[in-house]
Length: 345
Image (tube, rainbow, N blue to C red; front, side, top):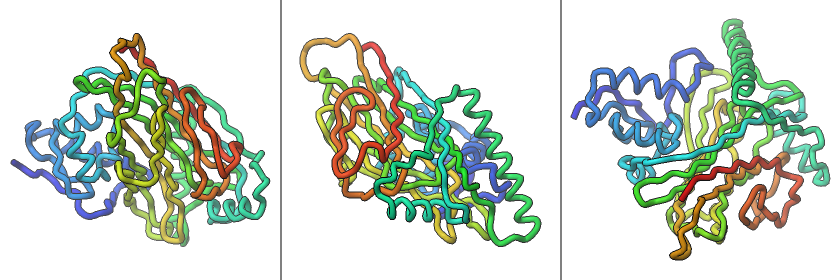
């Protein structure tokens, strides 16, 4: 086998323009390497040192994994998914713009959280969400990224110490995709959220996928991951890291209506500014009886904390959207986004 190129180290760094984005950099590198390689040859290594062939890369992307997720994928998830072939798939995606008020200094997320901790009854009325079409969503996202790129280039050129941060009126953009995948005789549900523009407020969020009583979640089939890229506020560059939620993780909540996973969204620090943030979960489902159903329904839900919440809260899950009952925290603490995917059995 021929190793064309390696992506070395736990973290990865791209020397290209600051806001080219690591999501595209991995794909571009992969495309260049595969131009003279056979499908069964090793054409790259991801950030965990896993060798990936062109065929395996295509299998992973067909399953819904982003380039950033593949780059940060661990051995367990890679071995489980690299040879799987999707026979058919239906998916639904929703796109949202989020506006929230924050403090006016560079440590927006941290300061905003501290303010909310001092006012636990504040449900953050200065928080609005607007559903967008796909076209309008990417138009606005590209505008924000272009403006930020120009600002950061100016900052670096003029020798300023810190890259630009958001204004006091913070606008972020997120999307949620729910997929029903048929892989041989297996039915898999795949749920993914992506913050194309990272939110100021980052705390304990919940990602769930619910099913009706015709089906049950297969115990031990669940897997999830949170992935982020970041830049150094003073030095620039792009790096990546992740948090894995395997089947033995205590962050999972298994109920008859499906699985949910709690994720502590990666926050900024004095030496780290998150530039890309996403997460996914998947699990298999099985039919409950010999009766053949007509349809398979899956409701994806992403509950984003609008203010800092304790990690100790719990929730119940039922079929539909949104179909989450909260305990130890108010439902108004979350901004819930729901998607619905449906296919014939």
